[in-house]
Amino acid sequence: MALNPIYSRRRRVDIVIRGLCFAAAAFGVTWLALILVTLLYNGLAGLNLEIFVADTPPPGSTEGGLRNAIVGSIIMTLIGVGIGAPLGLFAGTYLAEYGRNDRLTSVIRFINDILLSAPSIIIGLFIYGAVVVPMRGFSAIAGALALAVIVIPVVLRTTEDMLLLVPNPLREAASALGLPRSLVIKRIAYRAARSGLITGVLLATARVAGETAPLLFTALSNQFFSLGLNKTMANLPVTINNFVQSPYAYWKQLAWSGALLITLTVLALNIGARILGAERTAK
Amino acid sequence: MAVQSDVIDDAGPYDRAKALGAFKLGDVTFYWITRLSAISVLLILGGIIISLIVGAFPAMKAYGFSFLWTQRWAPSADPPVLGALGPMYGTLVTSFIAMLIAIPVGLGIAIFLTELCPQWLRRPIGMAIELLAGIPSIIYGMWGFFVLGPFLANTFQPLMIRIFDGVPVLGAIFAGPPSYLSTFNAALILAIMVLPFITSISVDVFKTVPPVLKEAAYGVGCTTWEVVRSVVIPYTRVGIIGGVMLALGRALGETMAVTFIIGNSFRISSSIFAPGTTISAAIASEFAESDGLHQSGLILLGLLLFVLTFFVLAAARLMLMRLDKKAGK
Image 1 (cartoon, rainbow over the protein chains, first blue to last red):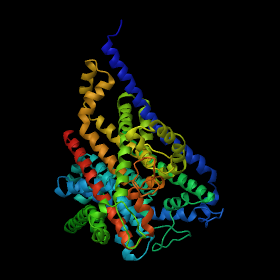
Image 2 (image 1 turned 180 degrees about the horizontal axis):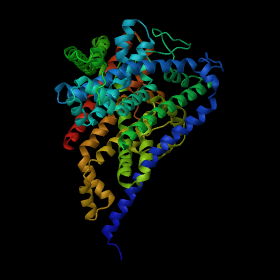
Image 3 (image 1 turned 90 degrees about the horizontal axis):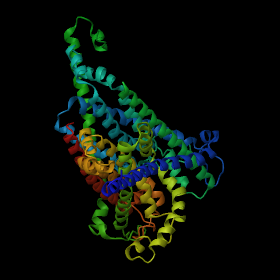
Image 4 (image 1 turned 135 degrees about the vertical axis):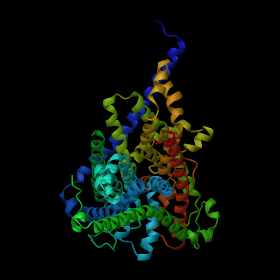
């Protein structure tokens, strides 16, 4: 049977658009693949034990690793998450448990959603004005606080979403047994939403582990190994930032290795969070 | 099942009043801890606004509104001459080009994922796109600096320059010479970075379309594209625009990816293959070594960026909230 001309034209348009959508998906996946391949190719070449045991080299040297930067990044990320996650968790608890129909809740939720996507460099400027200037100097604690400010909205959002998923009859049953409100939340709601809450914290950690902009003028960087929180502290992102634009081949090599480390960490955290989240929905 | 509670154990089995008192105290404390944590979000916003205004005040007083339309940026002149026109122009142009690329591609991926893709491929591709969003922006910047910039300067840019040579307006937009560091390179990296935001929000809102509507359209003989164009997209328009605005908010403020590859030139050039700068790139590359009026000028730039992104993101959220209401959430 011959197709009528209008229908065959519609079919052709449809096929072209389908092809374009397919191309778009291929385009997106290709970028991820390209980035990962170049990272692995360039990063693995320099990845050896020295990276983890030696400190960042002085200009021109061809020996050294990233130990101080790795340790500094871990310290600042941990402090940042350590301050930001509980605040975000409690704030999310308020929004989901106490203030469900509150006017305050809708205002906070709105502001939080904006902070969630606010440019991270603005957070850096804020901490510079609020912490670095009064303390008269760049410091690791300022960097950690900047990261904490980024963690709060992420954790708040996931906490609220996850607690809202906990079925109300659970809470009602606990209340009927005479549990006070705070224990209903802590013993029942938190427990029911546990994997979701952990997912939120993991996602927030992934988000700040590679953050560079807010550290540029809060923690700065440090060429030496330092554990003092009131001094500048080396960290991977800023070290990479400095090394990429340097003229030294060895520094560039270190930058690739550092970039590989950060990316693998962040992707592992992201995938871990997703698996944990999927487990939840599967049940 | 007995209620396991330290409070009850501590109070002993018979001392009911004391136990209830402890409950009450714990209740009130917990309530206020959560409430104050929630309020801290508002304090952070207030802190950001106040610290930016305080920091930017000297520059505001020195330049007034002329800051907005001065192109010259000469922080080492005496007195320093500072104008925001270059970075503002760069911020808007890079974001505009990025959205021009990312919107059709992002929507295309979303349509592919919801309508065309075989079920078993959906999760891996969706996950790959989401992982793109997880890669830190400094990695994009570094990759753009070492890989994408040279590649574009050797292939894509000369091609475009040759094609549009002599064409009236386009000839000026695609003018040579090719360059590793250019506005276009930065815009392309931005497009890749915001792609996942557009895709994942579009996929979410496409799923809110009632299957009955789509089935009815297929039933009267519509092709997949016709269903998408006449049913899915009209139904989800507000949500798509919200997602696009959200991505735009990201693009406007993105820092590290842009800083590496835009070239940090404050001169406005008509060609998108020439170096430029954005607000965030200017702050990132100059702030740590700035002082006095120069620093204040950079903070004023930051304030402008914050106001701009605040309104874009607020508009995005209001649109997405409207959609939530429609979905009956």
